[in-house]
Image (tube, rainbow, N blue to C red; front, side, top):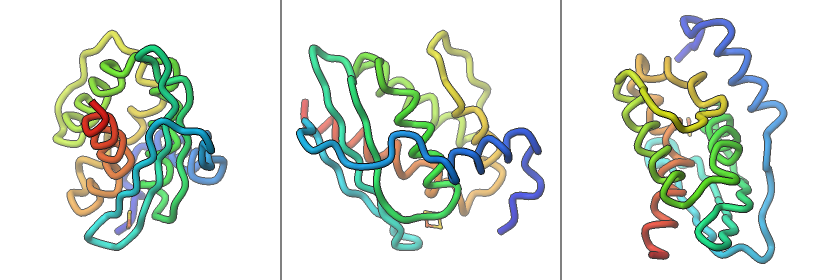
Length: 144
Ligand code: FES
């Protein structure tokens, strides 16, 4: 499926995160390490998080996937570093709502994640965009 219909600026942001991923790698002494794959294509992500005093102090991602999944992982890690765990979960909820095409009204700094808002028009790719977020949510909820 082509993303030609996505807004040009948003497409540029997505491709920038894909080609120059932020927070790529694995945290050796992580507090949480989560592996998750997209059942529709088999692509996978490994997410590692470092949490201190209820704050996400570091987040890294590794894996293979399409431009949407990998750029989303990059944006997600960028958005949650420095946030409280509850805020990271709130961001995951906001992102899910964005994928349903809902308007977003939040005081939280969303970083670049709005660039993925147009993915809601491509239902087959929503699982790509949410992969990293689901991994983050699963890891945090299981650790609680
Ligand atoms: Fe596999 Fe997007 S096609 S994650």
